[in-house]
Image 1 (cartoon, rainbow, N blue to C red):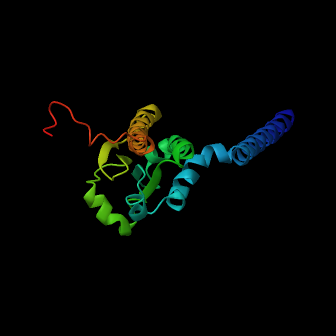
Image 2: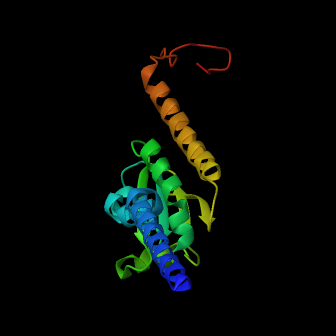
Length: 181
């Protein structure tokens, strides 16, 4: 009789511990869902945040073009870093995100020889391809490439602006020994 009551008590304790464990897991999933599923959400939002590629290649700004898929684990892993880059540079650089599962982007997939994802292509403001990264990349590597494109674009702007902002003296009528006249 005593062994039956011990067995019953043991079963009740086991059931209670299982219930508490399941409750803890469930509550943890609810509390930490943003952290656990953030990259999936970010990846799904990329398409909505994307600049149209036709506009991006014509608006005289450098372009960050990423080919991705929502099922791609590496794409999910890189999504927070890519999102941070977009937030930092979106005023100066076009961010274009093309889902390889969407058939309307097939011409871009063929044009840029996408054979692995994620693939990031960086273009200067004239639409010239500067860098291509395939697979998992460190944020700093991509950021350095963006900085180089951005600094090159700014230095070209400074040269153009410098040319038009300085009033130069007209020396067409100066006579020197080599002027023939």
